[in-house]
Image (cartoon, rainbow, N blue to C red; front, top):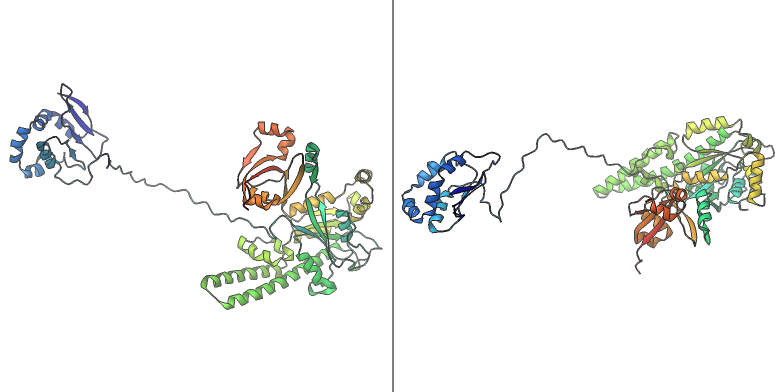
Length: 523
């Protein structure tokens, strides 16, 4: 006889002829070291083997064994008081008898088998600190109307150069510049082509049959006067026109000209800024007070608890907006939560609209870049409207440039005078203020610049081309304009690994060149 396998899990006894005898398995709860019972079993191996393999001996000895000896004697010693069990293969009635005696004692763990494998319980880990949860960041909602078809309005007091600027920037004859107040009654609308060197470069490269640049819609709004918020000088109508646009070009007169009258009698840009700011804010207070009155009626009507709670919360927000305005602050300068913005946007408040200040200088002051009023204007804007862009412009100079028959002649005049036109800067700044960007589609048939809101995802950008593309969007092949210009060819861009395939979560960046892949629309 020889011991083939000896360990904490099993004993397998073979005879010299390699005949497998009934074997004994010992399953231990702790298997990291050899159990003390193993040496004892090795010593008693001949007796155990002889006993098990002799049916006549088993049948004669078993009846005389006392169950109390088995339970209270040898097998109940600490060596065998284990969360384990003995298992013997069944080959005869004597084997079954011995196995029944050995397994008579109850153990907490079931017998291992292929259908019921031994369970191993992981030790509890202690003193493990979970990382802190990331604070949920609320997505910022911009003030104003959503979408990419946004409008700008030229606003200011009467006789400050609004209509002349409108004609110069739109290169059309709409509008009615005149040397008297209220020459413009109904607002004029025109689209302005957005100057973009990227679009020009793409057109030169592809030489398409059709070229479609981006554009910006501009309105010429009649001049305001002191008291417009109470209806003076058709003020209510003019303020409603401002309410319909998404951003404001505010023209401030900083030139002296005895032939052009001023509604206030003299040129004082700081006073003019105060008048416009006050009139817009007073009209907003009127709008908000009406909204608050209507909201209080809803709150008094009561209703279910959730609806009532929502109504009270909205009422508190409107009261907060009203207090902000009565403190002399513009709504666009407040730090509003997304829920508060959802209350502000439907009100179409005048002071919530972004503003670009256009300081109208004489041609002489514009060329030499000096004006006595500029420091005071800059100080006022810093105090009351910090962060808003300010662009000096000479409307008279811009109007004179439009008289040239060609753009080449106008460019030559600019070189001669030593001052570039401010119109391209004004248009691009307004797009930036409106948070508008562009992506391009290119090819031999058409090069087109599409206008989107900054932060737009790929499916929504595809929807600007066609609404079906947003519904059936699959993916977008993206290449940045800078990569294409640097490498010069789409094949080279792809070879360098800068042609990317993006899915629905991709945020389109300003200047991306896109190829949209979409499925067939459902009929």
